[in-house]
Image 1 (tube, helix red, strand yellow):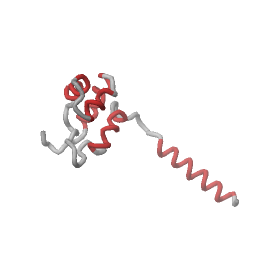
Image 2 (tube, rainbow, N blue to C red):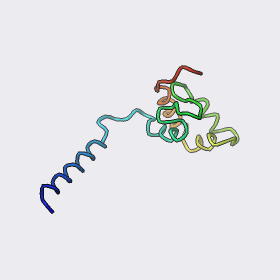
Image 3 (cartoon, rainbow, N blue to C red):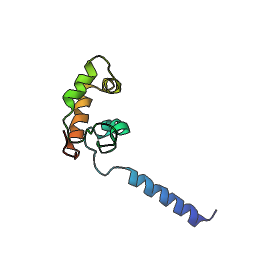
Image 4 (tube, rainbow, N blue to C red):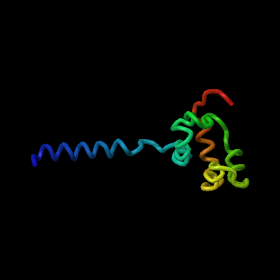
Length: 101
């Protein structure tokens, strides 16, 4: 194998690794809220499900966690501590919504 090809491959791999490392700490709750993207979209305003961007959902999430199981959101909420639900709600409230309530 040509050394220049190997060198380029190593440099390219290193560049990918560096690009993958965040340069600043992510907003609290962002990683936790990534689970929400499966249904609500990566920006909290995904098609087909209720928009969650720009809303304070903490009380709703707590209600879902402690009420009898009615659906998937009740099961999802049970997977988090109350503090994690607060972080998720706080993060989602910072996302720009479409203004509908």
